Length: 78
Image 1 (cartoon, rainbow, N blue to C red):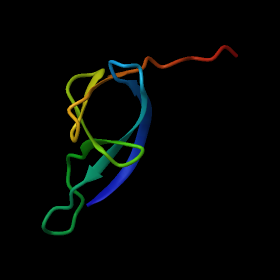
Image 2 (image 1 turned 120 degrees about the vertical axis):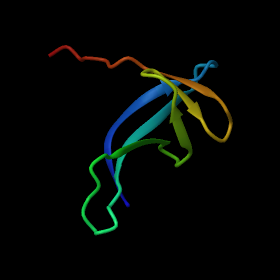
Image 3 (image 1 turned 90 degrees about the horizontal axis):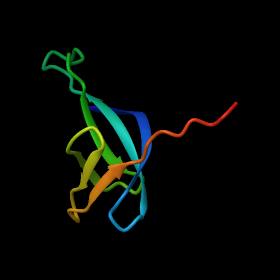
């Protein structure tokens, strides 16, 4: 199984701490060795802790049970 980093974003907990979350897509090869059809998306903190997606903007740290809220994308003026 190969995981490819496809995105990253910041999320905050209720106390205002900021976490860097990485989004990966994992391809699961079929038994014949051909790449699977449906990639699986997983999330991890930059330090490696697993994160579960609850909805589009809400995530849960698996080890601690802390809820994280995704920070909105900031667009810098050109």
